[in-house]
Length: 124
Image (cartoon, rainbow, N blue to C red; front, top):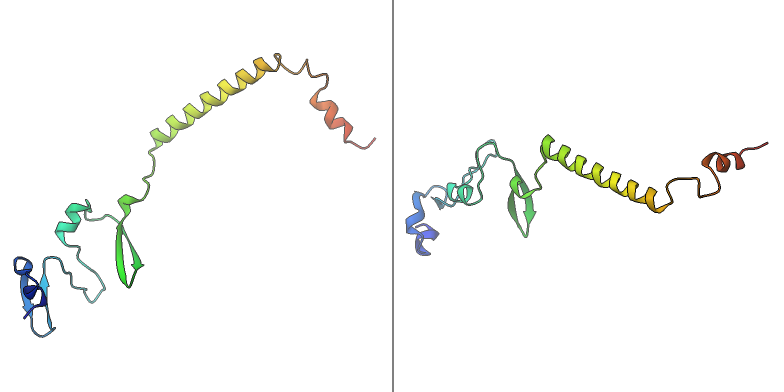
């Protein structure tokens, strides 16, 4: 008798495997000789896992956890990256324009030039 029958899982019961000492049900998978595992359809539907999707396998509390790759951050498309770059560039230009206005319009008010500072460090 299958342990799941005793626990009231008759609706999931598919096949009794007396040679293996357990039953096969809709929420149980069999490992193939190539170590492949079939994901139960109910779980695939619930977590929106499609054929060809990647999953991550992790050890967890004496068991194995399967993590869908969709839970990882997605990559941005080229158009999205370009849009973000353009927005950042315009923000930087606005900061530079604001800084030049608050500094008095340029380097003339400083009383020194960059070249003078570089010349100070040179051996004469």
